[in-house]
Each structure stands twice: as C-alpha cells, then as structure tokens.
Image (cartoon, rainbow, N blue to C red):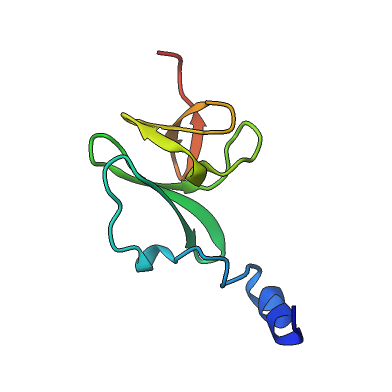
Amino acid sequence: MGPIHAQILDELGYDPDDGRPQLGELAFVAVGQVVAARDGARPVAVARLGSGRLVVVADECPHDGGKISDGYVEGERIVCTRHGWELVACEGRCVRAEPR
C-alpha cells in the first residue's frame, strides 16, 4: 500500500476500492437478491425480499459478525449462510427471526 492509499484510508475510514458500490450507484436489486454496498463509510447489505420490499441493513450478522450480504433471501427473511440464522430487517439492522 502506497502513502496516498494509506492517506485515503485514514481520511475516509474505509477503502473506496473494496468493490462495494455506494447505495446511489446500485441500478437494480432483483427479488430474492442480496447485494453488498456502502452507505458512505458504512458497509450495508441491500436485499429485495419476496414481497418486493427493498431493505438496507448493516452488513453484520447479530450472531457472530459474518456478512449478511453473503446470505440469501427466503420469503421475508434474510438467511445468514454462516450458521443458518434467519433474520428480519429492523431499523437498519438485522435481528433474529422468531422460529416458524
């Protein structure tokens, strides 16, 4: 990492070249899709639930910090692929869903 890149990381607090688009740059999220993005410096997961509702949540599983964006949609829930936790979007983050 060169000195300019280190300075950018220090100033922004994140790596703008990490491959995550900013929310405003996302063109389309299909039903059932989960996409990694950024809301400024904050890593987020954007998901289109089975009903078509679009949700944006912190990209961190409440169980162990895994990436929500690596998960998948099942109906109105997002499933974390690490341990199968079923999650619901709640105020910009995910919480564990009640058992079915």
